[in-house]
Image (tube, rainbow, N blue to C red; front, side, top):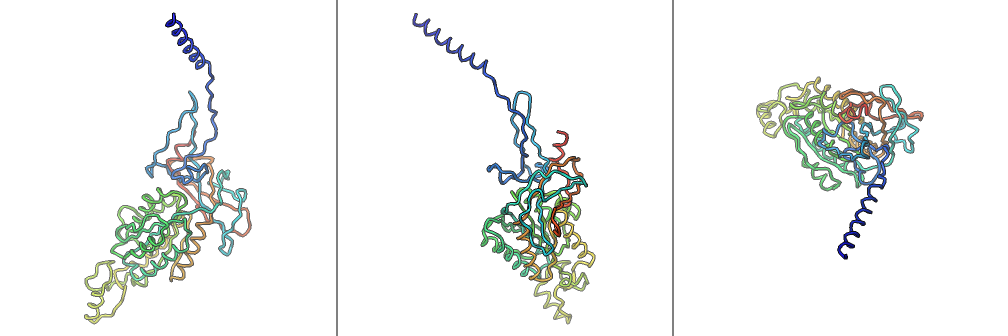
Length: 395
């Protein structure tokens, strides 16, 4: 009888549990607006929003996280076509205008006004890639370039990070992103000139191997005369297009080396390779042969190549939303760096969901207007629809 009573008690307990489970009502999750998944989001663990990149995550190798189902027959869809950009607003004297609010801005895409869905005005740390041309044409400017780069590092705030990359025929990573000022200055001093100039490949490398992986706000400061001689895997058009796609600014500082290199006038030193460096042996040989010592003469680029370089640097800055500077002396560079540092730390961030997403590869024109008189707005004026934007079309 005791066994039968125990069995009856167990059966009764199981029956009550099963009944309780079968009659409970499972709550359904109502579809709600879900913030976009942001690639390389520095605020992912803080709960605050931040702008995503303009191209698809597959370019950077990032894998999207799967979204769990909200119910038996419904999935919450994540919008990923938010277009964002940094915006600098200056007065006519070049001074940054602070205190602007979301309602002070209007965004137009292909002439159609868009709703401003994202706005941020808080100063944030940023990462800068110092991309230094150490090709033969810069050999007489290398000390000035190094000094200017160190001056720029000294102007940054403690939380700002810098990466140092130099290039001649090859690309050399001298320092990974860090805020260690001693390490950065040592890396800058390591930049020594070599043979060849793979400018386009250096820009391509920085965009695809660095900028797409760097979190948060980022920019490239490029020192060069703009002349490319040895790139094979990238070109003028491809790199300008990539600068238009990526969410990083290019600030180009052009050193005019045409006078140092004699504008391609020929008559270089005996035994000197085309575009190679001048050594003391070259100079002594020229003196012994009774010739004039023309330091930097011969083997240089033509005036047309220098003009092409000038146009390239202007296009690179414009496509990314940055600025181009001309550096005739170290004083010009110091002034340029001061403006760049100020601009980077005091930008607004704007974002919107396009009314029409468009197809992969479409170029969209952007116009930012500020409802204030006598202001200058610096921002991207176009972007290219990437894989992320296309995948959200029609959802």
